Length: 344
Length: 290
Image (tube, rainbow over all chains, first blue to last red):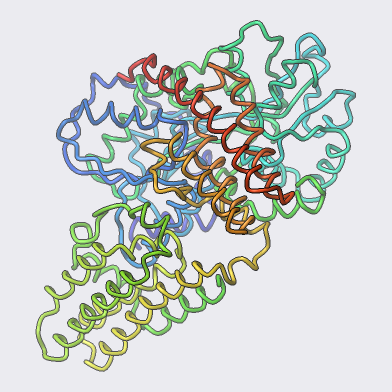
């Protein structure tokens, strides 16, 4: 069995999550490195790049190319899920065109690991990540977390339930955006953690309580204006709004160890292990790139020693749930449940 | 459509009887990394307007069939098929229909490659000329099946009978280029071109297609821009989100006039042009990566 087949087998057995294969290796850690200490990349790399975060990923790639004039970088762009399908189709035909796949969601990564296979990551890359983010066959690059933005003039932090399960039973005015992909990933994690029955009951209870809005920015804006007390949204909406309007009475709360504080990530699958791809991944995990993602995109750095974006606590203090991120790709049962309950 | 395609895919797998190991061996012997490796992305302008190019696709498919027949013939004559195989890959990588099938009919894309590597597999295991002929015919069938899938799609047939639920799920993975402008190069221009395409579709009595274009454009292009805009002008982002979700789609849903749709489009154009100016300033003010 070759290494690629080995990874597929592990994926099929559900053994690719963190804290499993690598639990015994979690003690060996490497400090984040500066790009100044990296050798130059020489050679050709084909990257399949999932579209996301405006031009920020493009800026990073351009900067890497400028620093490495002997790197020949071919980029194929598209939605992450479409590129994942292409990689799977190509693998099924015995063709491999991509060396790396950078996806904005872990669901697309799971699809590739399960159906196309990947190369094991060198330990020099894995060990730069915080232990809970070390995977056998792909490397997370940055994260975003589910939050409970609240209006500080209408509600105190202490009045906010610590469990997402209790939210519909509070007397708070709540907003959510059920059509959003991030919300649907959250409900998928909810199903995985709490089971179908509990999720269905929670959705029904929330339906009679929460106001549905077109997007998560609308949720955060409605909380900031005082139309709502609290909302469900990814963290960066609040941080970005606060940056533009520091005076708004808005802050972030987190539930404890449940889907309400799910941490989802973008990441790269290593499809061809060669010196240039390994070095390219090390560039993405440098102090400079990780800090840039935190500073400009408000994304959460996942390498050791890099600070989260301003306004967000360290992940270790938030206590997000352990979810097999690869399984967040399974949206169909979630959509069925959202429709069954009348949420969608 | 999906089930039929999958059946074909599975049938192809059954028809071409060789082991996965043989396929991989054949693939490596044939050095796909030089011959097949990312020689070019699909031409998205062509993908967006594929239904206008069937005459060209017919010609391209005929070329592919000749390339397939050449491999079969050379093998039957006892000659090496190395050059003709390379020519097959080069031709397949160069024709426009390749990228269109890959993007628009992804379930019909793998059988073409499977057919080709089937021919390689027959050669590697020194199979008979009859086996090579049979696999060659399967390859040609896969090529025509791909084109048939595109014709079916152009005619808006069985795919449209799937549930909206499935549509919404799949649509999120589609590349939102309906107006022929690359969203990675010029995102706001691509959005405006897509919205024009949506209103045109509505003017041609296809409200469902029009709504789908607006939905995909929002999900695949605008959603990735809004992060930067929130800091600069959160109210503008809220306005644009409402226009995407409750402006044009409601006109389409409620059967409004084409003039109503064009009026909404004019409002969106104004908002989006304002967003473009802000994005340009944000980009020029941005800190450097290294």
